[in-house]
Amino acid sequence: MKTSLGAFVIGLGLAGAALAAHAQATPVGTWKTIDDETKKEKSLVRISESNGVLSGRVEKLLDPTAPPDPVCKDCTDERKDKPIQGMTILRNVKQDAGDKALWSGGDILDPSNGKVYRVRLKPIDNGARLEVRGYIGAPMFGRTQTWIRVE
Image 1: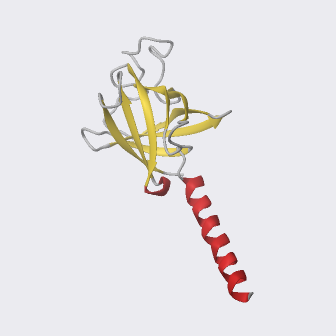
Image 2 (image 1 turned 90 degrees about the vertical axis):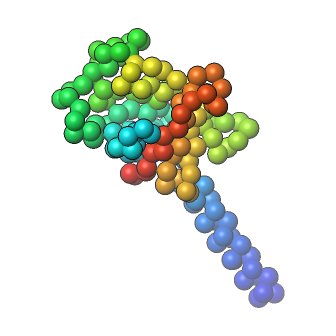
């Protein structure tokens, strides 16, 4: 009886650890964005969830060469000429029904060129990093940035 009770307690502990790791493997949090071409830190983006839908806004710009208080001059929607800091760049993203490790269905804005792309988010390394894939049409036609969790 003691052996089966001990195995049960160990099993519960392992299940709890797995749940804690899964809970951390979510896009919700603050992320340091890294430019996929220059590999330089660009900004901090806070991703939040409301009713199962994720959105992300630029909390802080990190690029010391950026002009002070930059605006999205190339945006073509309601964000045109609005300050990039504080701007919502990630919208309408939901957990994928087929693959619970992915979030998709929304869009992401690249404020440097004003282009809006479909987006797919995938937490990796137990949620320490986030693969952000922006694409047009199908995910194979896009590019991926890896963001680093700050909190």
